[in-house]
Amino acid sequence: MKQEDISALIKNGETQEVEFKEGCPSGHKLAEIICGLANTDGGVLILGISAKKEIKGLHCDLDKLQQDIANIRQSIHSSPQVSTSIHAFDDKKIALIEVNKANDKNAHTFNGAVYVRIGSTTHKLEGQALFDFLKNKQILCFDEQDSEAKIEDLDEHRIENYLIKRGQPDYLKSNNSPEFILNNMFGRLNGKLKLKNVATLFFAREPHRWHPQNEIRIVRFSGTEPINIISQRDFRSDPIENIGQTISFIRENISKRFIIPQDSPRRIEIEEYPHPVIREAIVNAAAHRDYYSYDSIQINIFEDRIEISNPGGLAQGLTKEFFGKRSVRRNPLTYRILRDCHYVEGLGLGVPQMRNEMRKAGLRDPEFNFEGGFFVVTLRNAKSNIKPVEGLKDLNSRQLNALDYLRQNKTIKSKTYANINEVSLPIALKDINELIKFKFVKKIGSYRGAYYVLNEGVKNVK
Image (tube, rainbow, N blue to C red; front, side, top):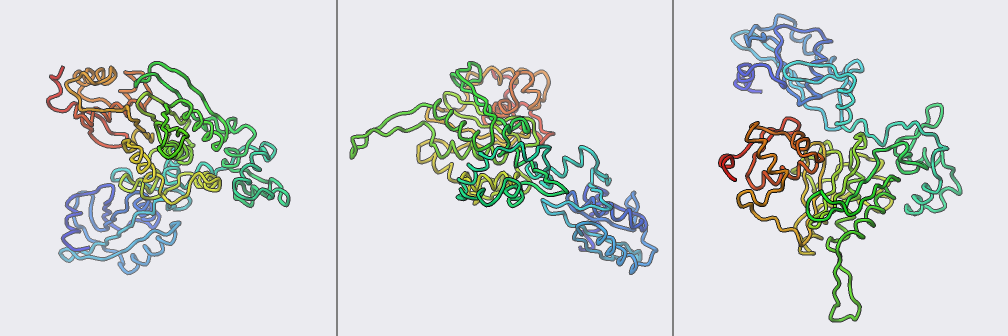
């Protein structure tokens, strides 16, 4: 790092990525700071600088310091990428320790503990904070965690059906169920056989008993608002059966038209949504949802659209920029089973294919939204005709209610929107996105800290 860059770091003071120490801290303290920087965003530790940004210089053996840092790096599991350099400022020497950020699915530990940076300080993670960190890193994958179920709780018919789809119908003739579980890494031996969650999710006699969150709730409404329910179903079996039942329900509850080609006397049935798009959206919801969440997959069928909402935003390592271009797996064993059953291909082609099928049918591209911990897919049919809002006449009652709230309270969060309108968070986020699109409100901040304010010129619109 250049001298002027170091000077700029010192001038700007301590941050989440920068820490100063006036002298040479103990090896234990250095390890905690390096571990914390690596587990957060990476950064720089500068020795010889006071908390008041004064260059004090170091008076310890610098050769020994660099050797100590190399040893400290080895004491952290797994060893982070660290580089150390010595710099002179007005005959005062300082040490610059640069720490690279950990890989997306890796966490560094020191003495078995995880440290992170929060603001300009280093913290040891414990309890729920540690669980959330490891889950977000996808180090704790739900389907790979131990289940309380026993081998007797599994349904051999479900295993047989899976093996048939995988092209191994005779597998159980030469292997028993425990061997199937171990050979496929759906469990482990620790004195006795321990099933993983994936085993009970797909093969238990009662999957919903072990995983009540593994549920798809589907509602058909009349009109375009979630008011009058025509029909509804809850599916609570294994993911494969849930997918099949959900697709069947949707196909029974959407419109169809018939055409007779010129070269054939037979009529052809055309559904208002391309079947491959429906299938891909449902499979993705089951494959990529956050199974740690207690929320269900929610599907709403309206006159002009279908909304598919599942808990879990973008998986770790996937940004909005690369969504639809890369395949990242939140639940690797779940994904493998669905791939074996020919539901997914693992090439990241699903989203482009959905767009292509919708365009071939003369429909709008699918809409993908990631907010409030939910992933929402909206499919619009030919009846959908969103037009620019003139005044407020095209807003629904919830949106009008939110604008009145904003005139009195200046800001609103998505959770507040959902509460004052007594709707779910996915519906609230969909409404808010329309208000943003038509420039009634604007978003301030991101993630959990995000809130919304009125755009200039809206306050007086009636």
